[in-house]
Length: 516
Image: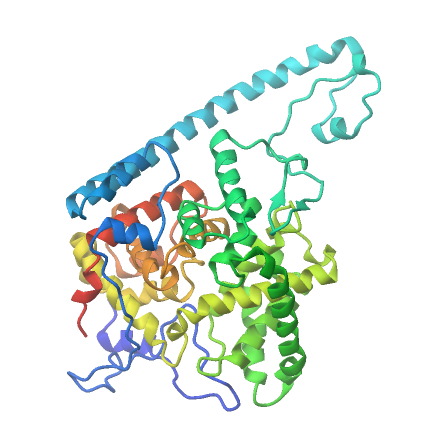
């Protein structure tokens, strides 16, 4: 067990300012300088922080008017919607949300059973294929070959097993308003529920003035991939609700961004800014997914976006962690122009004009996000320090056993939750889960700054069993910094959001109990 002096030295940061830099550059995996830990703050004095105003919601009607439904129409929803006619009751909310989580778990088990059944049937189907083709004395063709071969002689066609999850080669067709039409692209057929949701989005987006409140309600439980780019641009405030103004807004904002590039980007080699650019250049290769980030064209785009943002925001400058926040926007907006998985897609194959559009759109949407959490990245990152303290207070009320276990083994929340706040859980879950998580964050009035706190609390308690099994400081900290989420899918994120939704109501006053 390390001594108190040893731990202080381990977490101590060098607060000296690097000559020529815009601001301090903090490590994404290490906390900033904390005056309380280093003894530079007198007892009883208040550390400098930026207060966060938290609005308390007293009734379900108020919540319904300010945010969105947690789930689409289904078995779970009637239970929650039935609460709308009466005042908020904590016991009722907790009981209802618990039932929703159980329903999700049952669905997940059903999916696993179905997958096992499919795996059992596949060998049998494959064994039947030779007999179907034996009359022709030919080998059965692969799916890719059979799709491209000539079918002039219908009697000699060879039976093949269809691959419902194979990606199409046809390019997408973009409709008015930015909605992509996949009806003729060869994409696997959507389920009835998925098709119904997609139709709802398309109808809402096709109107002359998109109802943003309805769009948020519809988006809370996830946004279909085909309409996610346009929906994110609307929910972030980048595009106007009026459909006639969107094209003009896009042209103006894209032109404005590249005017910034022309004006500022050459200054990256000047003494004043070279330290900022050097740090950006170092951090980008550390991002994920590597297959995308290490492409020279992608690296070049990310460097420009981050450097221009840093120059235009001297109060914070560039801070490690901001670089991760570009990726989801870049991936989602690239999906508008390709059906391939972007993580493995060669972005240099896209036309130069398309890449410029993706770059500018990613810059502006990232800027909108950071406008709401900029105190996370100003000097000493007071926003993050305050949120970590609030998380500690919240967890102590949600699950005292977990909280006491961390205290007993002297694990500080700042040691693992700093990264959760700094990177918005991007280093903790796969990129596909981050994108699904951001569907909901952008549907919440203060998704990234406030609702994220409840998601982090639910995320920590989610690993209660594993946490309580660890009896050593080092092993416990290693586990919390490397949580086993590599196989997580949208269903896991939905369960996490359901629990965060429950906590938001059950412990809505938790931040008010936090005292410095």
